[in-house]
Length: 186
Image (cartoon, rainbow, N blue to C red; front, side, top):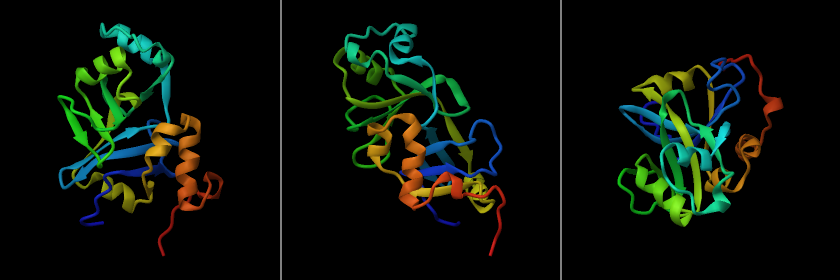
């Protein structure tokens, strides 16, 4: 597992992963390096839409077509903080470029732009993120807690949340029903 960089990959939680935060989760890895990893769970909408989130932080929503867009549980770290996955990357105050098209922004300016102009048009808004310390994700991978597959922006932005995990699994050529909750090593 040394020198594996999973930035711009999906993690698919294996059935053996009993942590309630990650059971049946599809995590998009936004950054992975020697210091650890940061990801966003992309298939867990919460009981909040974009209109109510923007209202809570005093941003006017003029792009009414986005009002019912769901907000997601991004992970158990910093649940009071918003993160926006978006395409294109754009020019925001605090953006992590994940690849040449997709960015993760944690600054308020991106939400202000979404509220006023509806841009960037392709977004996924989360509260919280998933984080791993140095070596922690590699250890979980060695324990067969996760499957990995290269991410595809269309899965993030074009599919409803309930279709994202099956679509990522399909990239591997398997379905969730084929996975065992018993891990082994050859």
